[in-house]
Amino acid sequence: MSGICVFCASSERIHPTHLDLARRVGAEIARRGHDLVSGGGRVSTTGAVAGDMRRRKGLMDDAADAFLALPGGLGTLEELLQVWVAASLGLHAKPVVVLDPAGVLAGLAALVDERVAQGFVRPAAAASAVWVTTATEALDAVEPGMLGGRPTLRARDVTEELLEGEG
Image (cartoon, rainbow, N blue to C red; front, side, top):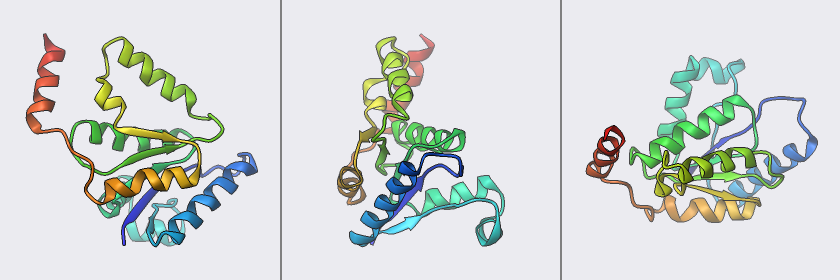
């Protein structure tokens, strides 16, 4: 059994379709026999178990075999970018998948594509996150990588990229 860390909104002001999406994702994770890794909020038992936010995120990263981001706010964006950058640097080989059926995060995808076109982001780094539109596609995208099917960058590749950026 593998753990899938889901990043998503904590706002109660969002459209109900996002809650339906989260329910579909949870049901698909359970149907396929995976564990949900979630840090929840800082309230109640979640906060008591994990302590502060940085510690909670570290525990989530360690427990997860894959990361799945749903539309969310700044916290979701921060969590997504943190694991996406880590994957692009070869710090982990866990799948990073963005589930965005309504295009809420399309601006982020466009921003990254523009950074690739301008030479700020390597195409391989941008491609280290997979964008999908359904819960089924999301689980289909994370499962092969959880089985070790995703290569990581070698430390030499990361060093070469950092040196290229200085030149």
